Image 1 (cartoon, one colour):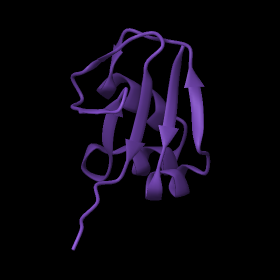
Image 2 (cartoon, rainbow, N blue to C red):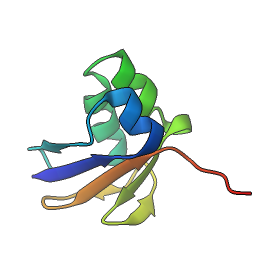
Image 3 (cartoon, rainbow, N blue to C red):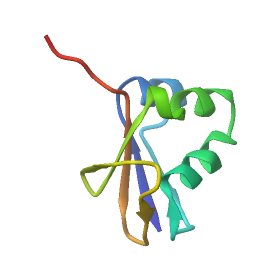
Image 4 (cartoon, rainbow, N blue to C red):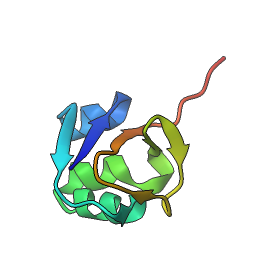
Length: 81
């Protein structure tokens, strides 16, 4: 099982703080695609340009393989000043 967390604007657009996913051994891109199929808000929130991904608190790209027991977090890019 994969635990998925959403933060910031990503969380606001989707409307849930987290969810779980039974499938493992998939890439971040495959997970994005599966979650994006849940509706327009999910698709918009999880597009690569508007959302970063971390697996087990390490920033990863869309080719990263997610395994059973991993924690995946999606969040918007942030800028500081």
